[in-house]
Each structure stands twice: as C-alpha cells, then as structure tokens.
Length: 535
Image 1 (cartoon, helix red, strand yellow):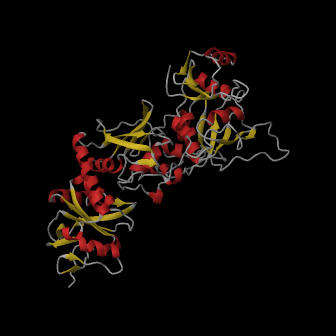
Image 2: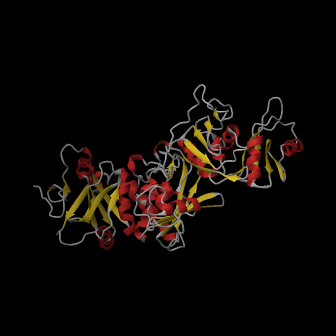
Image 3: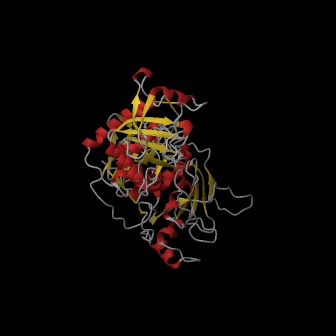
C-alpha cells in the first residue's frame, strides 16, 4: 500500500505505514529505506522533522545538517538524492519551528546556489533501525561533526551578526572579493572590512542576522580556501555593527553603493562621469551598475581603450562554496583568477624604472615572463606573470608601493599577454622577455618560496652567502650602491643567510632591485627578498 502525503511535494511511498519504500532504480534510496523509519503524523501541526525539497543531486549530508545547525541540535538526517528531497530531525520541536519560520519569512535557503524549500514534515521522527547498521556513514560523520561544532560555540561566547575572520598560512592572495564570494554562499553579506594585523590578513564580515552569521561560522570555520593553505579561522566579533566609510578594495558596504572610494581621482571621475554620468563612486571604480557584481566580473573604467580593469576575483568550483565538513572544502578551482596574468602598472618614475627593475621587484611574488614599458607613456608598464594567482599576489603586495619617489599603482590588465615588438618597430629596449630567466623563484611546483612571501619591508632577507664572505663585505657592497645599512645579522645556525635593515621601506625596495643577484664571489650571487622580521 502506498500513502501520498498532503503537504507540498513530500510524496514518499510508504510500505506497511512505516518503513520508507525506495523509488525504483535508486539504489541509494533503497539502502536508506532499510535504515530509517518514518512515523507518520497529521499534516496540520509542526514537527521536529523538517522536510527539504529541490535539493541538488550531489548535495551531501553535511550540507543538509548545516541548514539546521543555527537553530538547534540536529539529531538525524536522511537524504533522498533520487527524489531531490531530504529530512532533518531536530532535537526539539521549537528548533524546527524556528528553522521553518526563518526560511518562510523572506530568507531563501540555498544549497550549492539552488533555492531549496523548507517545511514541516508529516512525520514525528526519523527512527533509526539498529538492526540495519544505523544511517549511512556519511550521515553519521556529519552529525558527529555538527555536535562537535555546536559544543565549540558554547565555549566561545555568544553569537553575533559580525564575524572576525583570520586567514592562516596565506600562500595565495585572498581579497575582499574572494571573501565575499565565499561568505555570500551562506547568506546575504552586508559589509566587509579587511585589514592586516600582526602580519596576518583578517576581515570583519557583517550579516543581517545572528542566524546567518552562526551558519557561516559553523560551515566555514577551519576550511581551506586553497589546497592545504589559506585556512579560515572564524570567531564572533565584539562589534555588533561595522561602520564602513569607503567602498574600495579594503572595505565594502553592499547596502550603500554611494560611498566614496577614498581615492581622490576615482571619486572625481565618478562626480564628472567621464563620457557619461555614473551613479556612484563605487560604480565608477568598478564600471558597474550593481556593487554585488563587482565580485564576479571585470569592467573597464574610463573610455577610449583604457586599460583600467578592476579585479574580478576568483571563481568557485561549480559556482558555489562547498559546505562539506571535509578538509579543503572551499578550494577555488585550480587557483585560477579570471582577471588573467597580466598587470597594468602605472605612475612609475620613467627616469629610473627599467624592465629589469620591474622584473626583479615583481619577481618576488611570482615568475615574470615579460615586461613592456609603454613607448608613448613611459610611466606605465605591462607585466606578464607566469600564473594569474601570481599576478594577484604581486598586485596585493605592490599596489601603492613607493618606488623611486613615486607611488606605483598595480591592477589587472585587459590584455591576455604581452607581445614582443615586431621587427623594425621602435621599442628602445622597453620590452623584454624573461621566460627563460635563471632568476625565477617559483619554477618548481609547490616551491617553498611560496611560504616565504612577505609584504615589502625595511628589512631584507639575504641568502646564498658564501662562507668566506664577512658582514663588513656585505655592508660595504650595499654602501657602495648608495644604501645606508642600519643593522646586520647573520642567522645563528646558517651563515648562508642574513638580515639587513635599511632606513625605510622605499630604500629597501630600491636595494632589493639593485642587490638581488649581486656577485659575491666567482660562483655565488646574492639572493634578496623581503623579511617579516626586524633586527
């Protein structure tokens, strides 16, 4: 005998009024049917079992569990992938009522980018049949992890709408737009503020309500954005609201697109509108009609074939962040940045900058393949990196850096590559190919150099020092190149390496460019990079 329920599309075939009967040709459902019993109930009343419809075919038990975690303890889960349905059993009816009311009040529940429908089930409980090996191993793992996470929240302080996010082991760059993509998969993000504290990239992220913030914390805490790195550590902030003054690459108020960028030139451009009037400084900065699309697409700012393209961020696999509890669940597909591997670098000191100088400086953050200083605009250059993530990394650390007395600007270019000049075309040595350079730092896949990337600083790390070279010889070499070392220190356990302190970051940048690959002996050339330490 088959019984069809009355509520929504909860049409589950029942055998003997109790055990779930599988749909034909769905082996997974057949296994689930053996393991779980559903007790039918009157459809008119709330139930602690919640019925979820329209789930994606590849959804996991963990993702279903995460929908219920913010509302209370989850005690059982059943996923019917063949029917695109799932059941979630809460510890008490009040938690289920809170969940159904929340997702019925205008806030859509989403799984992997698809809207799902949450309603009360016609069943009182999901009864595990002990004689049939309990529920699936995946369901049990999801429930155990959820209970562990719930236990953590009880000791970490009360939930809040603002989350504090710390990115540990940041081998690859993480931007505001990357965070927006990840955290907006859990719910609507209102504001983001990013900053660096104790050499660690951090962010404050505000949601509209405590429930969404709690779901984000429980879903994303401890996950890796990339393989084995860029780990998210999330806790509740002491702040109840964020006060965002500017919409730019460091902070963003998605509820107020009219905020200025904090960049005088961009704000002035927004006010005049260039060829046409733009709606706001934020939109002028991104060339957008909506601030939300800033995280997903690039747009030209300025007309006439200008090359001012703002970063479009990274793409998530399948268009969404996985909510699975397994490791590396948030990996971005291949660490690929849709903005490409070419950077537009402007506001350079055209009297001093050379392709070799830019190769050395940008080579700290990736392997530079080609550099072109524009023939008719010599304060601007195109720099092609080996990989898009290297371009993003270089842009993150070098944009607004002071080089030779001027603050350079670095941003993604619309070009996909840098072309060498054609034969007979005037170039004056302004374009140079470095593809086969022996000075690339990241040629080996998974190079350890990725773990020693730091922002420009006044302290330089020196390596490849021959054992017979003294402190005085190294300091004299810097002095002869018109630099003034403030301090010097060999590594106690390895005299092949040392730290040297310069008077300012700008001086250290110039020294790195000048002294990297400096010949210390017949067979040894100095290697120079930025250090996180001071002497």
